[in-house]
Length: 185
Image (cartoon, rainbow, N blue to C red; front, side, top):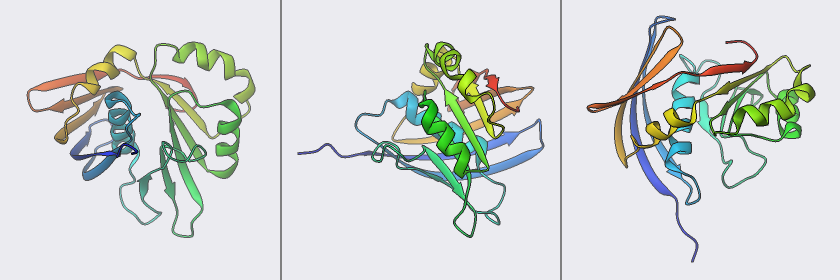
């Protein structure tokens, strides 16, 4: 019998002090049996950081990347069905990123393993002409600490200030200091 996804509920309060933007999100996240808590928390973080202020140009949705290999982790489509933004996690193949950049206005990658810099070095030359790609490296130790905040029901506070991201859950908090490896910040 196949293992079932584990359902997590997350209330996420976002305070982007750098851009004076504030939002609240009630998320239901299905964690695939093979997905780690760290990866799931990076998905939630990516959602909170990239959710549009309103749905006038489409909403951001969790993709089926764990079930369908050609799907992104998150995707935003406009009201006509055209892809506006694709978000990938980990270290996607160069061909996958080229295809994503060809079909979407914007592509963002959040690389979070200890080999992220080596991965980027191996694909950077091949992707140097792509103009709608942004690649972020999230420090491994910080992502591990973020994973320890995971729970089946969680209330998360995300604060962005001076380029750092603070994620709090109850009396615990984690600072994430992303490094932009490519593209605009």
